[in-house]
Image 1 (cartoon, one colour):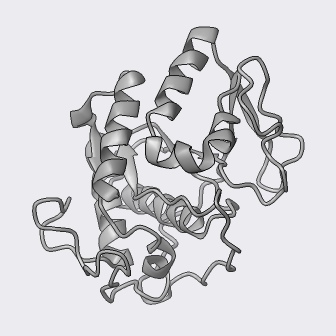
Image 2 (image 1 turned 120 degrees about the vertical axis):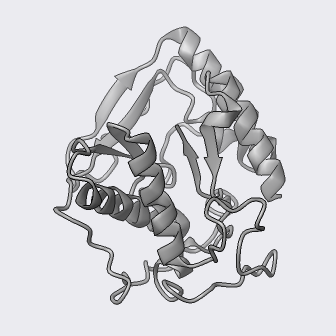
Length: 242
C-alpha cells in the first residue's frame, strides 16, 4: 500500500506542477507517528503492518535510520536546512487524527531545531491546514462543490484567525484532478475528500516557539485517542513536497 500511495502522490503532485524528483518520501511507518513522538522517541518501533523497524536501506532518507522519533526529527531538520524554505505547511495540531497531531508536533520541532542550528536561516512562517476537524460535519456539505467556499466559522479559533486564499476556477479544476489521483483513498472517502475541492484554501498561522521544544529525554505526552472512522482511518506516510 505504501508504494501505491507514493505513486499516487507523485501523480497528484505532477498535476500541480511539482516534478517527481522534488518530492521526498521519508517512509516512516503508517499509523505509527504518535508512537514515534512519544513511547518510541529513541527506541525502534516495529510496524504492525510491515513488521519492520526501519526503512529499507534503498528507501531510507538517512542510511541507518530506524523507526524512532529522533531519527524522523533529524531527517526533517536536514530537509529544512537543505531546502531553506520561507513558508512551511504542516497538519493542524488539533487535527482529530493522531498521526496528524504527531506530524504537526514533529514538523514544528524540526523548524525550531533548524532555526537554532543555523542562525542564517530566515525565520520561517509555519501555516497549519486541517483535514479531520473535531467539529462534526466539517467541511459541509460533504460533496463536491466547486463554487462553494470552505467555511472557517465552525472551527476553533484559539490558535488565531483562519486565513482564506481564493483559488481561480482553473486552479480548482487542477485540484480536483490531483485529489482524484489518490485512488486508494478516494474509493473509501471520495465524498469527504471531494468536499475540500472548493473555491478557496484555509490555513491558520502557527505561533512560533522560541527554540527547539521537543526534547528526546522528555517526549511529548501521548495525544488523546480518537475513535477511528472510515474517514479518519486514512493515514499517509510523511511526505515532504519541495
